[in-house]
Length: 274
Image (cartoon, rainbow, N blue to C red; front, side, top):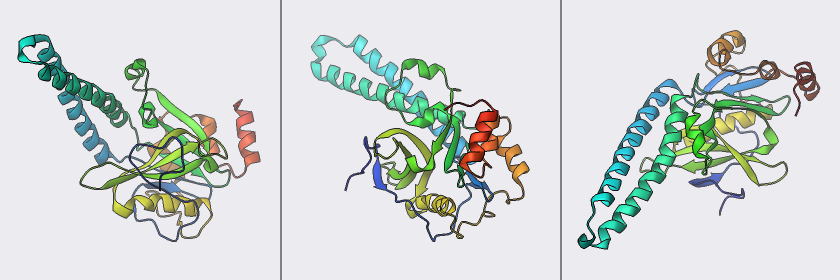
């Protein structure tokens, strides 16, 4: 059965239902949680090094391939036959399209900082993201965006508008990822995507989604001391993951907002308009 979200995301494997889960977290991506909010990192340092190297090598090889195919087309003699021309043109198109994918992936890996945490406040139902521009999975990009690798998306979302989807990477390793589909309120019309949990093997990809749902629904199975930092180590967590990463001051305060009224007061004090 196809995904109910439109448009669908490439590599769709299955939709995830919301609701508390009775599966404890077996994961190291939970960085911090207290009674108000939790923070999950989406890329640890070893992953960042690995994927940066992988995509950088792929990009270099694709650049070389583009140059070689262009060179072949330039030196081709008509008497050699049209088949070579057709093959060269098709290979050039594939190489350019692949570069269109790998260049953003390189930027995403290189400019992901401090694990790129995503914040979930269960008392206001808000989700906060501060990340590299290329995390948004857009297919069509203006060429100018390739010259702005440090452009960042810093946004507040409603939990009710975020829906989990599993995608796979089409490889023999059967790795899957959890992506949050950002929909227009009350619809299945997708307006953006957020990577939640990348590159997992098999069922492990649902642990983070299950823990977050348990947390957002105030289920006791979501132990707030399961993370990298204990609940009384908020200062240490912020010093490591938040400070110096261009998070707006009002947003950092909003992590701990205990109600929508408290959130509105924070925004009013900082002159934040919707």
